[in-house]
Amino acid sequence: MLEALTMVSGLLTLAILTANNIVLVAAALSKARPYDVGEDLGTSYGRITILVPAYKEGGTIHYLLTSLMNVDYDRSLLKLLIIGEADDPETYAAVSRVCRVDGEA
Image (cartoon, rainbow, N blue to C red; front, side, top):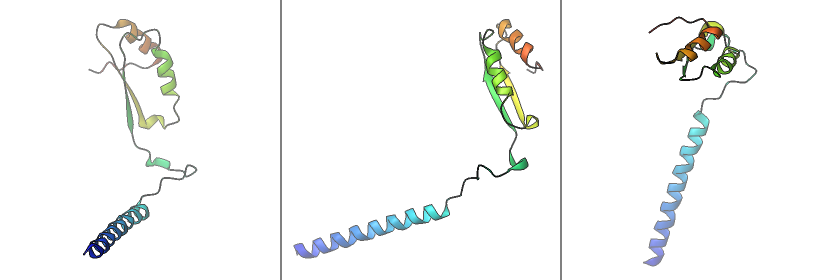
């Protein structure tokens, strides 16, 4: 009786491991491949909006904005939105010195 249980246990373990390996192989074969870094994606880049919350950042925000405006991305597809508070005129003034301010609410 013990030999039969050992054999059944071994067969169940083998079946589970085989099923697990089949799932892993299927997942590896169906995985989408990443773009080649050298590949020209052309206009397949999408529009992006970067939200920048800022409060009491009047002395430092120009560093961040300068960096964000120099990213290697098509300018026509990039929008920066600086989110500020009405009681923070220093940050607003610093942003308006670096960027065009639309003043959208």
